[in-house]
Length: 356
Image (tube, rainbow, N blue to C red):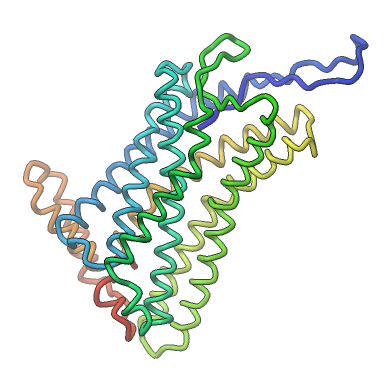
C-alpha cells in the first residue's frame, strides 16, 4: 500500500536558472485522497468484513467443507478478510501521517499484498474447478478430492507469501518533503528502479494477465459445453458465468492499466508533470474501485447459490439477539423458493451448486 508523495521534482541537464524545472505540485491529489480514501476504505472494510465472515460461518457451520469448491471458497473468504483487516490503518494513514511504527508498516503492507494475491489466485482455482467439473466430469471425479484441495490451497498461500516478500523487506517509515511520517518502500539506491518495475510487473502478471487468461479459457469451454447440453437451465448458468467474468474484468483491469502506465513513467516513456498528476489520480481511483471486488466475492460465489441461501436463512433464524434484523431473511426464503440451480450430468451440481 503506497501513497504517492506530494511533490516530485524532475531532473534537468541544464544549469540555467530560467530552464530549471519547477516542482510538480500534487497537493490537490493528496487533499482529494485525504477525504475520499477514508470513506471508501471504511465502506469496503464494513461490507467486506460482514460478507466474508458470513461465508466462513456458513461453510464451517453447515457445509463442513465437504468439497473442493467449499475449501476454495473458504480460502477465498479468508484472503479477503486478510485484505480488509488492513484497511482501517490505511484509512487513518490517508487522512493523516503514518503513526503505527515501522514494524506495522511492514506487517500491514505484507498482509495487504498477501490477501490481494491469494484472493486472485483462489478465484482462478475456482474457475479451474468449475471447468473440470463441467467440461471433464469423469476426470473431475478423481481430481476434485479433498486431499488435492488442501494441497492446492497450500501452494496458493505459499506463492502469495513469497511474491509479497518485497513489501515485508523494503517497506519502512520515512519522511516526505513536508517532514511528515510516511510508510513507503525504501529500495536500495542502486537498484531502486529495477525493484519498482519488478513489483509493478508482478502485480500485472499475477493480478490480471495470468488469472484472466486462465479464467477466459475455462469459462469459454464451460459456456460451449453448456450450450451443447440439453439442460433447460443452461441459460441461467451461462448468465452467472458471464457475470463472474465481467465483474472481474471491470474491477481489476482499470487498476492494472493505470499501474502499467505508471511503469512506463518509471521507464521515462513520458514524464510531464500533468501526466504524472493524472496518473496518480487514476491509480488512486482505480485501486479503490478494485477493492470493492472483495465485497462482491461473497455475493458472486456464495450467495447466488440455492443451497448457500438456504444455509444463510438457517443461520439468520438462529440469530435470536438479532431477530429484528433477521426478519429481512424472509427475502432469502422467498428467493430460495424461486431460485433454481442448474444441473449437469457431473457431480458438480450435487455438491457445489452453492458456488454458482
